Length: 254
Ligand SMILES: [Zn+2]
Image (tube, rainbow, N blue to C red; front, side, top):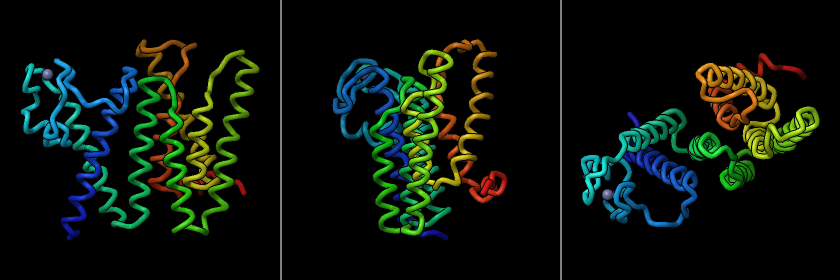
C-alpha cells in the first residue's frame, strides 16, 4: 500500500497541470492573453475561485455555468481526471523521487507542446526551454553520469532536423520541417541521451506516415499540406521511454 497523502498529492497535481494545459491551449488557439481571468465561454462572466478548482469545479457547478446555463464540455473534467490518473500512475511506478517529478514535467510538457502544434500548427519555444532547463537541473543535481550523453543528444538532435530542413527547402523550395521540430528533437536528445535519437527518428517517421496517410484517406488534409510533426515525436518519446533497452537493442549501431 502506498502513502495515501503522496498519492493524493500527485493526483491533484496531475488534475491541476491538465487544467492549466487546457486553459493554455484554449487561449493561444484564440489569440487571447495568457494572463486574462478565466471566463465562461457562453456569457463571458469571470469565473470564481470555486469554478477554477480542477475536476471539483465542474462537479460543484453540475457541468453548467451558473449565470447563463452554458454547458461546460465534458471533455474538460475528463481530461483533468486523465491528467490526475497519469500523475498518480507515474508516482506508483517510480515513487516520489526526482525521476518522477522529471517524468511529470516531461509528459505534461510534451502533451502541451504537441497539442498546441496540432491546434495552432506551431511548436512553442517557451515550454521547450522550460523542459530543457529542468533537464539541465536534473543532470546537474542527480544524474552527472548522463551529462555527456545528453549534451551530444542535444546537439545531434537539433542538428539533424536542421540539415533535413535545409535539404527539404532545397528540393521542394519551401519550408517543411520547422525549427520547432529541430528544437523538440534537440530536447528529446537532451532528455534521453544521444542513443535515443535513432529510435525516435525511426518511430516518429513511421507514426508520421501512418498518421499522415490516414488523415489524407479520411479527407481531412491534402498531400501538399504541412502536417504537424510534434505530436508524432512526442508519441515516439512515450513509446521509447516505456522500454528504452528494447529500442536501443534494435537500433544498436555502435
Ligand atoms: Zn456563462
